[in-house]
Length: 408
Image (cartoon, rainbow, N blue to C red; front, side, top):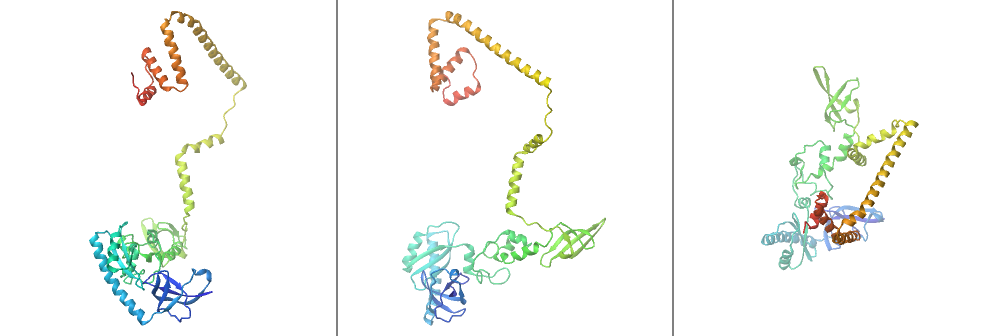
């Protein structure tokens, strides 16, 4: 077990833990502690307590001393210097025409460096600005970009509730806030009503989120059917979540009646909790069904009645007809081959000697095209089409146009 105390350096900043040594410290005391940046001035926010060793980040630094009158005077001087430095920095930003807003300045307690906080929409090249500031203050200068929520925390202010901003008083870390929280609490979705001083959703929406989720789980949906203890059925038209009351509309012929009931006195279908994994599976399933609507009918065919079996006589007649067709095709092929063989010697005799050379060239070109000489094969086919007067297929003409050879 280790004895620790909580120390905060800035208003509504994070709390860091230190070893108290032998000092008697109380909440609100000012102390000087050792940090990675050097000695710093802070305020005790958590009294001395014992915690387990694994709950504290090691190594644990110690409190150097309780702040004296000299330390208090030095800190007051630092506050004055920070205001002056902030004015100088804003003037330099205006001179360099940089698109940034300087929010605050922070001096190190030992005077070794100065830190400026600024906000900007994007990245800013402030190298020349740092050089000018270093020449003015003669110390190390750092610029740190922060968000609009951190800016509001540093500046402080009064919220729409009439109290001081949560982030500037007790809120240590910012929690993610979504529009779903406003819907769960049945608030108006007007941005002016659910936005804070920073322009983002109010952090206090997170405070009551768990309570509203617990209470809404017991309530029916708007427009749902509800049954009373005397078996009267009506429609839910209004919900009072905090009081757990429901207003039900009863319609009987031409008459209508509105009554308030406690949730415990009604019978209705409870709300279903949405499971994100189940929703994803349903979406994927619906997509598959939309893409393949015909697949649903295919299993029905296979699972349904089978095709009627043919008789033996029908099967024999069908097989005989197929055999006759094949025999006719074979006989036609043989006849064509025989006619071509008989006409070949006569054509060779009538052909002139020069034409034989052309035929030999054509065969060479064909062989070249088979062996990979595609250009020679294409040239041969074009020459042959021009001689015979045949019209090529559109796909071949497209190939010629793509290759850039559209005639001699």
